[in-house]
Structures are given as C-alpha cells and as structure tokens.
Image: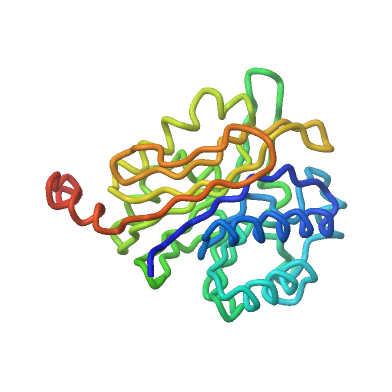
Length: 265
C-alpha cells in the first residue's frame, strides 16, 4: 500500500465545533482524492491567545468532544490521522499537543511542543506562548506502516538539533504542523522546511494555518510537502483546502547512501 499524505490548511478560530466541522469536511475531500494519512495544522480545534478562553475550551486529548469525533471518523474511514497541534488539558497544565490516531481510531502517540513561541517581532507583534502552555520534553518517533514518523510543531522548526535527533531515532517522515505568522513565514518558512528535509534526508509534511483569524492574527499558509532532497512536491499558498502527495520511501535510503553526511554526526 502506497502512502498518500494529505495536509489540511485551515483558518481556525476560537469555536471548537466550527473548527471540527471544517476538519471533517476537508478530510472527506482528501480521502476522496486518495489520502490514507491526513494531517492538520497547529491550533486545529482552538486558535486563541486569550488565556481565559484557552482554559475554558481546551479539551482532554482522549475525552474531549472534538478528539472523540475525530476518533470515530478515523475508525469509519480506516485511515491514519494526525491532529497536528491543539491545546489540551493534562492535569492542571495545558499543552500544545500533536495526537496520532491509527485506523482503529486509537491514540498511538502524542507529542507536546518543546520549543514555545516567545518572541517580539519587528512589526510590533508580541507572543508569549510559555505564559499559556507547559513545554514538552520528549522526542517522539512512531512506527507507521510505511516507515517511521517524527513529530514536531511550528516553532520547533528553528531548532535543527531536534530534527537530527528524530532522524537518529529512525524518522523517515517529519511533521511540522504550523501557524507561522505572515511576517516570519514570508522570510523563513520555505528555507527552514527545505533545510530540515535536506539535512536529514526526510520527507517533511507541514500542514498550516492561513489567512486572517478572528483575533486579527494573520498566518502565512503555504502548507507544503517536501521530499528528502528538498523538492517541493505539493504546496497550497493560501485559502482553506488541502494538498496531497504520494510518498516514495525508497528515495530516503537512496539519498542517505549516495550522500552519507548523516554518518558524521
């Protein structure tokens, strides 16, 4: 069975049920186009910088309304599914968490974003993700039928050592679900994504948020699938929708044998 990966591109808001409906609709379309692995961006079910709303509307990753709907949907469709990132409650803390589901709708693994987005941008935008979320501390690689999947989220992209460690743990594919700001995306998104692919000879699957959100934050879009040698296989520049690409795992071994740069680390 070939791997046909689809990355959804969303403009999520602070209404979880509305976001869920959009995810289901686009996933249906992606599956009709042949996808057997669907991935969503960061902030999938809840996009807010309001601490009170975040606390009220974040869900438990196994008991929440949105995740349970997705689990049932995945089981009915018999596909793999990655909730790329969404705020979840775990005890007293809120994590920015990726949740990987198998075709039975079971949670196979989770990843909590390690590098939290605390920046002051030149255009005056200020972000303090650490004031709302607790950082993760575990590097996660999970086995899929087609190879090994390494998990990351958005700002992690700027820390190449994380991806080297994912590759050393056997990752063939790396996910970078994101909500890049328009400002930083225009400057750095493509260069960073392609660099992480080339450095580690891994596929990079990067579903993204796009457009102007309810809170006036603008995200860059440009959901992208990149091959292990840095070629852009598919890209959606803007607007809600999805991209899909067939993944050929043979390329990974071929490139790693031709250019054995990874042996020197």
